[in-house]
Picture (cartoon, helix red, strand yellow):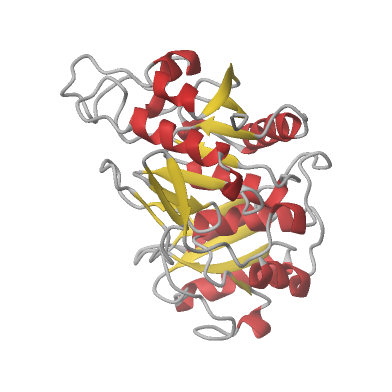
Length: 330
């Protein structure tokens, strides 16, 4: 008989821990009211997949998560993965910023063991809730040996996504998560099936370790729109070590915003051009004169992912060539 994997389920709150007044409440409900033990009791079938234990780390919607929450989650997951009697970790998480936490773990954990994040778009109390099946799938992924060595994963709607690519692209539908290059695979009948692996460096192949990180630098995002004023860019840049400019189209910058962004660079702020479109590549020296202005290009990173990567990159260097290399490599 094959020995079951030992999986720890870490609760942090979110819709997957939510509760509505009626089964018809799929969008109106109280968030983060159930404990992780309550959620697990709803899927007794999961005990056939792995030997499970649970712990409650946080209990709040992920829209509340800042850098200190990222550090706390990563530190606890790292500690668990280092234990010889733990084969993988599942983190229940609100869907709002699951893509940010997942990418942070993807870059800072130093383990080949699976770390799998999971949430739901409907609370467990709702008709056709995706909470139980998503969690069952996440446990199946974390427990399976084929999930080792491919970084942090997000499981939703029977799909397995790499933390680097996945974004929430719908506010309420159960198929809210997408990756521009598609999922890595699927969960079918309690078993993961993989069809591709991440090609960019992660976990053991990055220079960042959660065990060595201190306070994180402030990195902000400015979203471009037709009436965006220079004063807004100046105000945000004044408090930042790094600034992600989510430009229109191919990271385009309006003429009246060129000087504010260049002035930010002169003050030592690292400015990265990304795109508000949500997919595609922002090419260096393509739509804008990045070399002349001292800007960086996000490559294919969505603004939320670019913020996480720049935050970590700035803990190592402020040199523009080295920062650009991070966007080209990770």
